[in-house]
Length: 189
Ligand SMILES: C=CC1=C(C)/C(=C/C2=NC(=C\c3[nH]c(/C=C4\NC(=O)C(C)=C4C=C)c(C)c3CCC(=O)O)/C(CCC(=O)O)=C2C)NC1=O
Image 1 (cartoon, protein in one colour):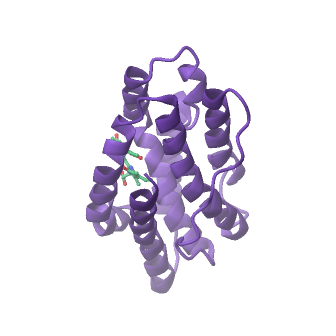
Image 2 (cartoon, rainbow, N blue to C red):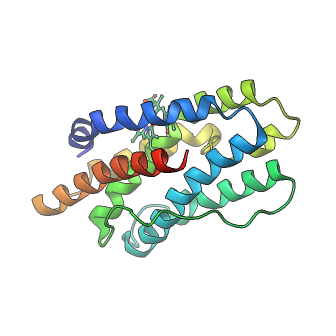
Image 3 (cartoon, rainbow, N blue to C red):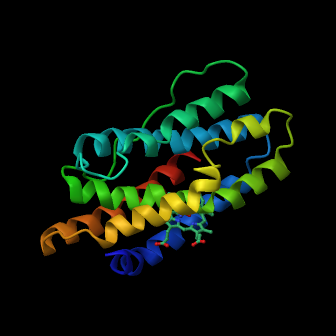
């Protein structure tokens, strides 16, 4: 399953990374960093709502501790110095109507934690505020546990025994997530 996901999304993944890296590098003011966090929030929040509603209850460890939208709001509030209203959310999102699609979307959101260390370094370099370390909880991912969390997710995917149709839906949901995040980023960065 993981190999199929990697192969099917490699180009889309590259494409999204190319879109987002400049936005990350340009987050060199509090306003720009808040906009970056809002961009992620607007996409992650609605996806997480649908994942929570459709992921199997047997998912190891549950989905709750893999949610990331709350960290985004916290980081926004730290930089802003006061609570900000939740940012607008994306409506053109991948279809998540079952466990297979929820897992496909999760592949993208969980994988994004792997770039976190690099992103934290870039932001700290470009935005040397005293409060910045408190405002990197989203990009910090699972901290020291990031690799472990990723490995356990991949392990679960490896043990996923869906039908061919379910596997197709899983891969297509991952591909759509990369595509639609790029569309959202291009419209909102
Ligand atoms: C935002 C910038 C951004 C950057 C610059 C970034 C960098 C990296 N992403 C990596 C891996 C993955 N990234 C994704 C999903 C997204 N990658 C993206 O660029 C965006 C935006 C994604 C999803 C939102 C996934 C599914 C995988 C697993 C691929 C697999 O193994 O199957 C690794 C590799 C780490 C290692 O293997 O040691 C790095 C360095 N991640 C970011 O979010």
